[in-house]
Each structure stands twice: as C-alpha cells, then as structure tokens.
Image: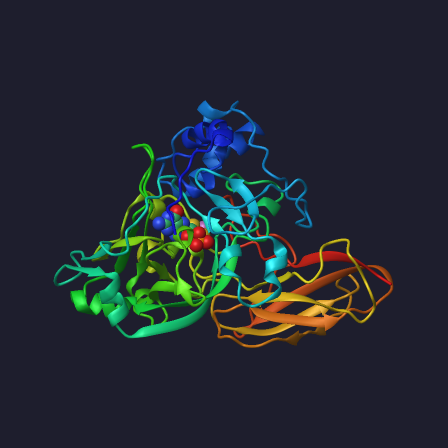
Length: 440
Ligand SMILES: Nc1nc2c(c(=O)[nH]1)N[C@H]1C(S)=C(S)[C@@H](COP(=O)(O)O)O[C@H]1N2
Ligand SMILES: [Mo]
C-alpha cells in the first residue's frame, strides 16, 4: 500500500495549528482544544506537572488559534456532527485530527470479537510517517543490555517461529472525551481500540539472537515515524524485560491474516497483549536492551497514572516514582454495541456488545435493563483467548424507555467502576455505560 501523504489543502489551517500546539506529551497533544476552552492556565499546568519532572513547555502561545471543530462527545458517548473521513485503505472512521492522523472506529464495528482491519483505529503522535520499503527495512537490535548488535529484516523475522495471538489494542486515552470535568488530550470516544489476530515472531526470540544480558531491565522500542519539528521528542517507549520476554509479546507483521496496513505499523509492529496501545510500537526499527531506566519524554513525562487510584497488577517497577507509574495493563471494560443510544427494539431482541481486560480473561458480563436495579448474567460468545474481545448478549426485557447497562468482571475479580476515577491525563475510563432503548 502506498504511504500516507499528509497535507490536503482543506486541512492546511488545522495542520499549522496542530503542529505547534502538539509539541509534547499525550495529555498535551491537543492542548489547542484545551486552551481554547481556557482549561490550561497555570493551575492546569501545575496539575499536569505531576509526571513531567517540571519539564513542561508552556502552551499559552497557541491559545487563540482557529477552532478544530472536534466532534463533541456527549455523556452517553453519542457523537453529534462526527466527521467521518476515509484514510487510504480504510473505511470512513471518526476523524479527531488529520495531522497527526487520529481516527477512531465507529461503534458498529464492535459487534464482533475481531475488528475489521479496514475499520481499525489509527493513532499517531507525530506527523512525519515515512513510506517504508519492506525489502530494505531493518530493525537494529542491541543496546548495552545486549551482548551484540544485529540487524533483522522482514525475511529474517518470517524465518523465525511464528506465533499468533488475538489481542486488543486500546489507546490509554480511549474514552477521554467522556471525562467530566474535561481533561486535555485527544478527545477519543469509545473507538480508540480494536481487536485483531496478530502474527509475528516472539520479541524474546529476537532478543535471544542479540544475546540479552542478565543486567538488562528494560527494552526500548523505536519506530520509523518522527517529529516534523526538532522540538518534538521522537516517540520512544520501553517495556520491562519481564513483559518483553512473555511468549505473546510479538514483533507482528500480519494483522487478521494479511500484511499490516501502513497506518497500523507496516512492515512490523510490537504487540504487547494486555497492555495499552502506547507500547505497541509501529514501524519498529530499533530495539535496545538497557540496564538503566529509559528517561525519554514519552516514558518519564507522559503515559503515567497516579499511584494508588487504579488496580495495578502488572508493575513496571524500574519506571515507578513515589507518586506515579507508567500505565501498563488495560482495566476491565465492556461496550454495548448492538444498538445505538435511543434505538427502538422489540422485546426479546438480543442486546449486547464486547468485554475485555488486561489479559486475565473475562469471567462474567452482567446486564441490567432497569438502570442498574437488577442484574443478570449475559451469555458470553466465543473465547478467542484471554487478550481478546469477548462478545456478550441477552434478550432485552421491559417496556417503553429503559436504561441498559453492562458490567464486566475478569478472572481475578476486577470489575468496572460506577464512577469515573478522575486522573489528569484521562486514562482508564471503564465507567459502566448506560444506553437508553425504547422497547416495543
Ligand atoms: N511508531 C509509532 N507507534 C505507535 C504510536 C506512534 O505514534 N508511533 N502510537 C502508539 C499509540 S499511543 C497507540 S494507542 C497505538 C495505536 O495503534 P494503531 O494506530 O495501529 O491503532 O500505536 C502505538 N504505536
Ligand atoms: Mo495511545
């Protein structure tokens, strides 16, 4: 597939604005939106400063730039005036920004456990996304935590034992647009996620080829895309060695039985099942084992959650501070996708959606047709593995206007929250969803 060329005329004004407002940090990348609304004064910055070691750039410069007309996310998640736009090779998706491309999947594609590749969301931090020739592309593998360095190409990867895993890739900021009070950042609704069947080589097999030392604590991942301006830090992420060594952590070159599409990371990307999308490095071209914690901006200054607020089983100890930790595994969650909010249904019609978690596996999904007064277990669909979406449904009961809710619980007893756990970067939204239906 051809590369992704940015900069259509109609987008120019937006591009210029975004490139300056975008400079650093996931929770500041769409600071324009935030500053326009006056959310990011000095106090806001102080609130965000929790994770940055004081290195926050000021954002005031872009405050009064042109509006972006982002589709507002209503509390129940229905987007009004959503801008649907087809990127090359993709179905029309909900456009949040064009440069860099941030496009979410409309809810109706979440009625199956596998998300179609051409409807799979697209998320980039930086807008320089080069075309890559898979024939000459190589990954540099090495670092001071490795015995040697090597270069691995696509044929080398394909010659290694191939592993397939069905796994959810969900952006840390999925549902950020539903945060109330509002937090700055890309205002995702429900669709910054997808589940695919990924195929590739194990990261641990590639690391073994380079000879990983016992002193190594993190594996640092870099991709071919880069910042359009020098001031933006390159997007680099690290994972702890224990996660890198899991059998399901892959360098994937296939998605749903076909080569990865360009916008989802061709020729190969990292798959970190259970963990949020930020670690799933696309266009992977550098893998380094290191013996000291990686201090780059995207580790030290972004994608962090306050300690003590969320369940935390998968720890990333080398990156923890006294107050926060990198986000790691996804929290247990579900989405009602069979019907849109406000739909009319016949009594007895199956209503349902999908549930997922950080890899412990979905144990139960309960549904309520009376606004949470009574709950019944839903029927679960096919089990595609503990990292996959699990479908669920139940025939709808009641008459007239009813409130449908779904609540997933995973195999270690974690469940969805009734109230939002507020956090400045807008992560881990797993509040029980309410959808109103009219039953005839
Ligand atoms: N090279 C590269 N990889 C990246 C990113 C990026 O900006 N550049 N974004 C990450 C984030 S935050 C997410 S949520 C996922 C999104 O994957 P997708 O675009 O295939 O849906 O890619 C991850 N990998
Ligand atoms: Mo993300």
